[in-house]
Image (cartoon, rainbow, N blue to C red; front, top):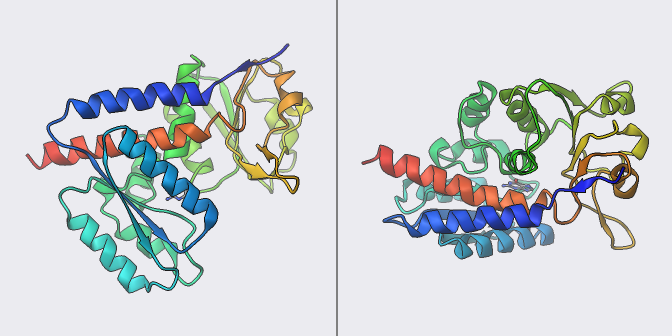
Length: 283
Ligand code: GUN
């Protein structure tokens, strides 16, 4: 068997075009503020891509660059300013923050109604309750990919590899809300390969290059690879050994061109959702 490739680039392009069309029909431009602290080169690339995609979809996007030396108090003051700004519908503070700044108080200072990353504890809790919230962008993107591939979720066994707050935990909550039977496997799981072999849907989000091997995959399973790992030789690979797994799976996402493009598209989607909710709620 050779797996069907789930083309995240194509699905994301359709989603971005739909958002652009929706935005063009609004009497206001949804506003997104991205805060970048310091000089992390990977973060700089992500933020540039977010800014470009937001402008492309007709959003009013601004990137606020602060030096790595900024104090937590000054960063909090910036968040308060954005919370109070009626033109700003979505606020995203790019992670990781410099070591001297604890992320939690910063993320908790963001108005939950503008929390387009879905990292505020109020939104985390609402997601666990199965409510329709601003959910984290990467797992939301995975759900959009599964929908685009017409994957059946109800009742099936889904295994999430990894328990991070950004991907693993919210991914499990979204799959559960869609009636999947969900297992979270992680670095302390006794037999991780055996857990994976039971999965009809496997979502790998561990950040370990090519950890998932071909003999971990149930024949015909859907394999979603959230990992983006740079190897010493410069190659970009996922958490899944692609060729081996594609020989067994029914459907699989490539890296790059799978989940990655969906994350940004879902950020735009969350910004429009936040804008509609806020501006309708505020009359
Ligand atoms: N850094 C890596 N992924 C993310 C993300 O989804 N959101 C934010 N804010 N920072 C990140």
